[in-house]
Structures are given as C-alpha cells and as structure tokens.
Length: 240
Figure 1: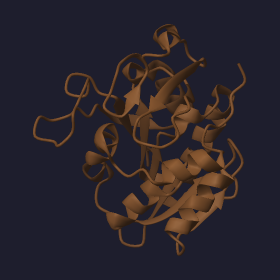
Figure 2: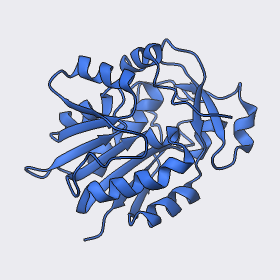
Figure 3: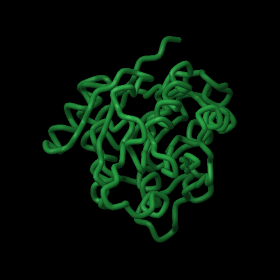
Figure 4: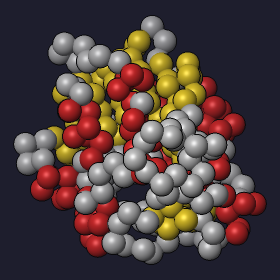
C-alpha cells in the first residue's frame, strides 16, 4: 500500500491546527519540560515536523527560541497563521541540508516519525544528528506499539484489527476523536527495536525511554492510559 502524509491536506491541517492538549495528547506533552531541561542562554531549539506549530509554540512557552520545519505546506500555512512572527521552513522529506551543522541545543520531534516512511528514516536521523550540537539533546516522541492495538481517550483503533499483527514498515491506522476530521489516519509501524537501530546508526545515544501514564487526579476520562502508555519519549544525546 502506498503511503501519503495524512497531514498534507487542507481540511485535516485546519482540523489539527485547532487541537491543543486534550486527554491522550496531554500525556504526550505533560512531562516534556523536565525532559528538555532549562534553555541555554543563546541556544536554539528545533521543532522537527512542526506541523501546525503547536509544539513550536509549546517550546517557546518554556523559554526556548524555537524554529519549526515540516514537509507539509498545508500545515505550515496553519503554523504561520497562528504564529505570524515565528520561523517556519518547508524542507524536503528526509533532507535537512538547508539547516547548518550543530545549530541546535535541543530538538523536539513530536509524533513526526509515526509518519516517516522507512526509507526516509535513516537519512532523517543522520541529518538531525548533524544539526544537533555535541552534548545536545533530541526528544523523539512517538506512538508506543500499544497505541495501535488498544482504545484510548483520544483515539480509536477498534475498526482496524490488522494493526495487531503489523510488522515494521507496514501501515497502521487510528481515528482521532478530538478533531473534526474523522477520516482514518495512516501511520507507519516502527517497533522500539528498529528505533534503537536507527539511533545507533546516526550516532545518537538513548539515555532514557519515558512512558507517560495517566493519573487519577487528571481531569480526563481515561480508557487505557492509566495502565498502558500510549506514547514513548526517547531522550537522545549526541556525545561530545
């Protein structure tokens, strides 16, 4: 089955641009401030796969000077509408050669690699390693393998039983509950073992794998989130 980026679509981009941090998405961002650490004076952060700019604005709210890049013109148009003074650049898939070497202290990739084709992942990680300064930190926020096999406050996977037997590089599907666009979203399944191989090839060291769980005191109607983590945040460092 051919793969097309689900977010390179005007209606979906507009729907996604209205999304903030509801329910399951809250867990994706809740713990990022501690994992990112404090901004370094004069340092830059990159939001790789910034989409409609939600995560770029999130980085800015933490005090980072942040730039966003994405492959989708439709999503970047939404980002510029919401943040007219921001820096948002369109880049080709798998190619960050427009960005200077060792430019960024922090890189955040929020859900981006769920939508990156297998053949584009190795060059993309190589580019991210190149633009990250030595001693810098990259946070790769991805869907856990369980996300595609269970029900969640913000997602349904029940209509897609084939998700449960998907192998690396095969399509998996979700339906997002928090946006107007109810069309299925196609991702590319990538198990944790494959990510570890990709990190090693790019010269990136995983120092932490964080699995955020829902808490009883949080104001959401959790479904699976208190017992299973829908996301995994891989904290990667580039050795000095």
